[in-house]
Amino acid sequence: MNVTNYPDAVRLILEWAQRLESRYVCVATTHMIMEGYDEPAFQQIVNDADLVTSDGMPLVWGLRLLGERNATRVYGPDLMLSLLASAAEQRISVGLYGGRSEVLTRLQTALARRFPGLRVTFAQSPPYCPLTPEQDDACVARINDSQARVLFVGLGCPKQERWMAEHSARIQAVMVGVGAAFDFLADAKPRAPTWMQHVGLEWFFRLCTEPRRLWRRYLILGPRFIVLFILQLVGLAGQTEKNP
Image (cartoon, rainbow, N blue to C red):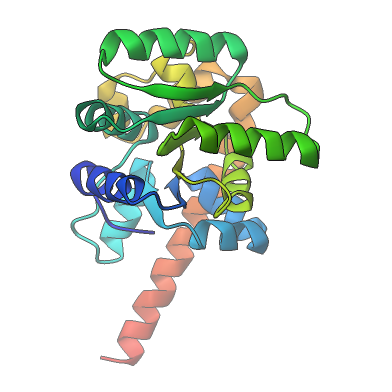
C-alpha cells in the first residue's frame, strides 16, 4: 500500500494518462484487504496495482501504528472528484465503466453540471453476467477508440480489481477502481456525514443504510481485520524486543 495524498495521487495518475500508459489504481478498504487475505490470487492483483491508496480510516490508523506517520486517507469518491477537476482543467478525456444504467445517466448529468469543461468520451453500464470474449474485445475497442485517458471503474470490490488486472495493457488508459463512487456522486445513495468519515464510523452509516448487502463486510470481515492487525502488531513488538 502506498502512502500518498490527494495532490500526489492526482499528479501521478494524470502524468500516466498524459503519457498514454495503461495502469490501474486500487483504492483499498479493510474489505479489500480481507478479500486478499482470504484469496492469495486476489491479494496478488492488488499488490500488482500501480498505486494503492488508503480509502478507509482504519487503514490510515494502521499505517500510522506501523510507523508511516504521514499516512492520510485517499477516499475513492473524493479522489474521483479531484481527478475530474484536474482532468477538466487539463482537457484530459475520461471514461466511466460500471454502475446501473440509470445511475450512469444521473452521474453524467451531475458531472456535466459540476465540471463544464470535462470531456466524458466513454460511458457504459455493463451487464451483470460476464461478457463473452467477443463482447469484451468490442468493449475494449470502444474504450480505446474513445481516447479516454482515465477510466473510472465502478464495479465494486473485488470485481473491479479483477477486471482492471485482466485488462491491464489492453486498455490504453489509467483505470481507477472507485467502488460506490458512481452511486454517491449521482446521489443514488447517501454518503456518511463528514464527521462520521473522520472518526472512522462511515462503516456504521453504510451498514445502517444497506444492512442486507453489507452485513458480512462490516460485521464479519471488519472484526477479523482488527484481530489480525493486533496480532501483527504484537508480533512486530515481539521481534523488536528480541532485536533491540
